Image 1 (cartoon, rainbow, N blue to C red):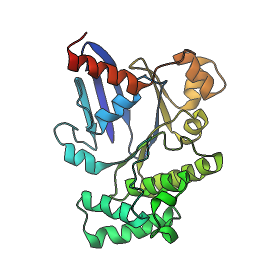
Image 2 (spheres, helix red, strand yellow; image 1 turned 60 degrees about the vertical axis):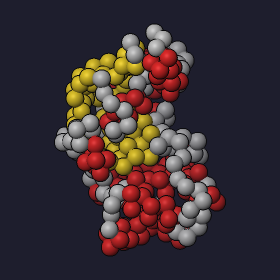
Image 3 (cartoon, one colour; image 1 turned 45 degrees about the horizontal axis):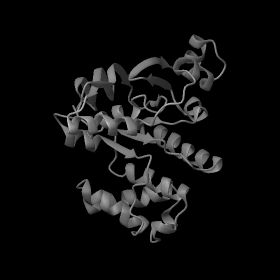
Image 4 (cartoon, one colour; image 1 turned 90 degrees about the horizontal axis):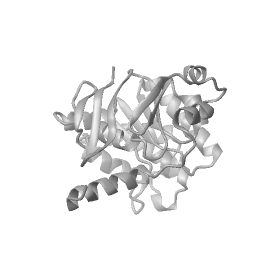
Length: 262
């Protein structure tokens, strides 16, 4: 297993937003983590990637605990955030090079790796161009290349195709599938596009109100819910009510902690 989660929970004050969840992800698997807004997806990913301490339970990523061995865990994963994280005043190559330096990579290692990845995502001929002039799809391709620079075991993708046109989304998923197959990289993704999860993921976990309500292949989820699409299965498991954004819930919970209000 590349990711092992046992009885994981997270509280903000007296509010439990992740409630004793357990799941495993196999090495080389494409694993989708789906849920409505506010379900606990982002909180879980933050705990997996050392950005947030857990309240209870166990996490192992590449056999390391994120709290006991945060540096080893960070070396083990790459991440593409939902919000853009590139420095748009730098060139393509400079964005890659800064990432390599932050990870302590030597020049003789990162220079050929940058060349390889920029060719892979078809940005090699734009390596000297400023990122501020790139389209959304080009920026996403660069973020994926940057996330793979240090040879991670796991690539976290948080809504990687949000706001992109269908052609660009399809192109990006083709890159990701190719990388998964060629380098055996485990992919842990979140998306609100059900067809992406159904098409890409080996298995899917659905979380709602901080609890994993089901986990399995898309076919298994549809079979157990008596539906004919992943979207229908998702709605049957989580309901039709509109939810708050998870970030808003986290902000309110943390504000209560800071002000001492319950």
